[in-house]
Amino acid sequence: GSVSTLDGLCTGTGVFLSVTWFLVRETADWAFVLQDLFGMCLCVLFLSVIRFSNMKVAALLLSMAFLYDIFFVFISPYFFSESVMVKVATGNQPTADPDYCEKYPTDSDCQSTELPMLLLLPRIDDYTGGYTMLGLGDIVLPGLLVAFAARYDVSIGARIPWNFLIMVGGYSVGLMMANVAVYVMEMGQPALLYLVPCTLGILTLKARREGTLHDLWNGPPSLVNGGFYHHNAVPMRRKDLESNGVHIEGEGSPLLYQSQQPTSYQQKPGAVPAMAQHDI
Image 1 (cartoon, one colour):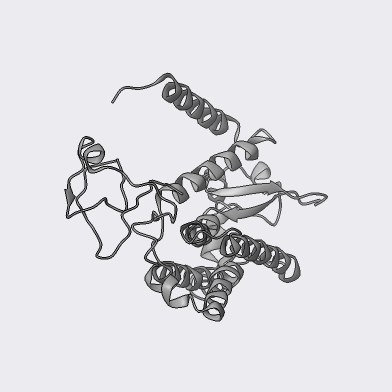
Image 2 (image 1 turned 90 degrees about the horizontal axis):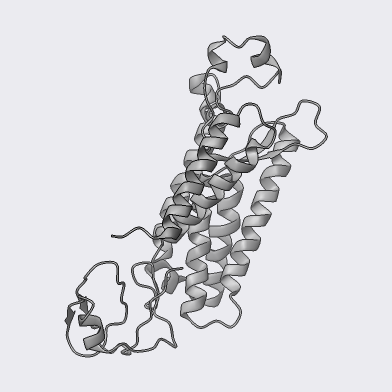
């Protein structure tokens, strides 16, 4: 398709910032700002494209990531003599002496280049320097569940999005617990060890108490393919959809329409002929 002026500006800005970060990543004190900007944009893009339709998928993914994170932080040293996750997160660079790589630049451990796959925040009043790090996976994996909770609240017409708010609060508490554990144990921590119970665990307990666990687990009828049927959706006329290349089977209006590509939709028996287009 045609390229708009906005597309050109966004592409140019992205290339400029990427090249700038690459050139100053090891010399400028503010390089972490660009890296954090890249990381946040990537997380937003990921969460806007990948969407859960039910809690079952979220539980499976987060449970596997939970065990994976624990194994490679706490158990892998018994097999590989060091924590694989900590080594990857720190870019394979020695951390005991912050000036080690300046003293021994030819050391093989100092030749690696850090990838922008972490959010970095400089430590304050720490004589050893360094950064507090948060992996992007520790953001997007629980974030998928948080986004699912937000769409569920909207789809049921909740005036106050309690599921979403509780998920945000749970994530904040879990992240705080992970940081406290780092300072208490003086070693890197698997963030998902704290984030998964504070998000998936809390949502499970809340849903079970309210009797909505079955609906969430199998996917509520209001959620389809990661989108949702809004309770106040405006019906679309068949001819309007067919004029956009969408083939419709059955009578009535389809409940969900995504204009990215022509798709065949079958009207659900007994469903209200209403449709809304949302990407959340």
